Length: 282
Image 1 (cartoon, one colour):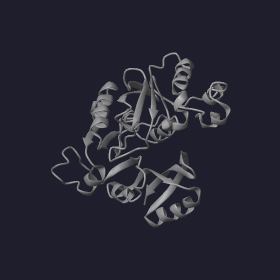
Image 2 (cartoon, helix red, strand yellow):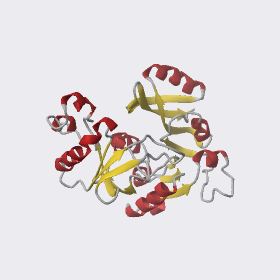
Image 3 (cartoon, helix red, strand yellow):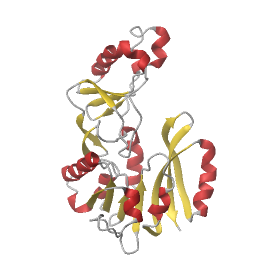
Image 4 (cartoon, one colour):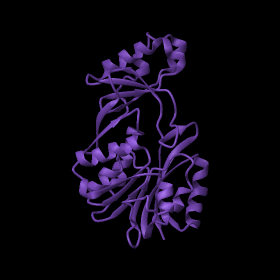
């Protein structure tokens, strides 16, 4: 989870980093398993070793420290990292009762969404068929399968897909999950393609879809909707400013959805937040 002790990293670096640069020290950073992940601005290059030492002293079992040096890039949605301390970025992360094995440098994983993932999993019913594109290493997949759903998970990144298969095995959910490596947008628009071996839409459509959509892919809602049954549920994630939300609710209504619930799930840029919409297909 995010580092939120009484003393922030910035407070801890007071007296080490000169005062004019202190506001540039991040207040918090993330833990994924026993790996700390931080973004250190270039202006603090001279203090990197001191920042790493301070991070290592804050939690005794921290095995490695990564510096995130880019935003998500490419179709695999992976950022670039520098390994500042430790031998590797491989780790076991535990969240909401499930275990995830991953190499943080090769996959996308946001530990700050743990509460949101638990919220969505609480909605899943035993026996449901659940579609999860952009599945990553499985943070929505495993809790849904653990509730007794039959999950179809699609992921384009081969490294994330390999981790997902391993995580399904680690958590003994093999009978509940079908993992498909490929482009979710292509697969859902060509469900009968011979290249999509293993993908099968239930006769009346999926009961539920959980869609952690990448940035600027709002159009994907249409592809997902076509594979969800009438009265089925869609948990759709998008990136919007506050001023866009009322218009988006109206747009979803015009598309044939009832907005049952929505909430902000964290800021991603100045003025822009990740939002989730729980939609009922009418």
